[in-house]
Picture 1: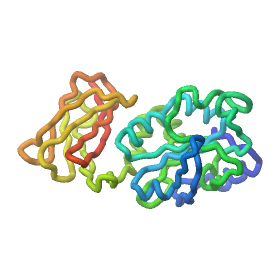
Picture 2 (picture 1 turned 90 degrees about the vertical axis):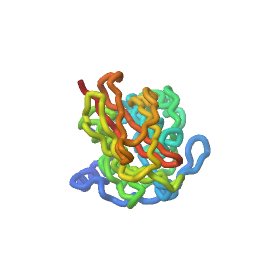
Picture 3 (picture 1 turned 180 degrees about the horizontal axis):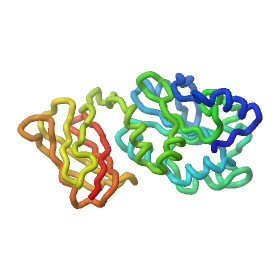
Length: 271
């Protein structure tokens, strides 16, 4: 159960139980991280990036448990600036009394939040400037998924984790809100995969026409590239065959790119 910090927070949680933050328009904010870098929510969304905003507290057991799984770092590695550049992860310490020492593992905390060298930004400010009644109405942790299309909070990744216990469900959630890669002003559109799950032999079908040849890069859920190939479309259409029978069972991220355009999708290998 998420932990609320005051009776008022508990009242807010009760009042918002039917709706929570899901479906609410995310209020804009500008915050500065511990490295002195400024982040403006609407600027990020206007660039076409999905925002994953983790509102947590250092003393919160569920927050620490989720953090220890490194899921946000995995998302950042795969879909952040050094991955497909479709997503931004932000950690927001939502208890104004928390100091830097607590984040570093001393005082009112459950551990060192920097022990595994997370590379996404951490925000720790006093006073709190984010609207908690929107961003964490049911308590901590609340891990908001904010869509660039309409600036609406679409999901809570903590609830996804509780429901299915893994990273794959989170990837499915954020993938629903990825937009075209506006930085390149090009996109290959959504890729359909069949069969999926498969035994390793599958077909990727693109929604848009390419020059006929694409680079296909396959990564595991740790962000490690396990296969790279160049494929030519089948009979000149937008279908591409892929053979991954040498890979172990599990879920993988597939990135298809042609010139400056790319798209990503997930596949499941079961035998």
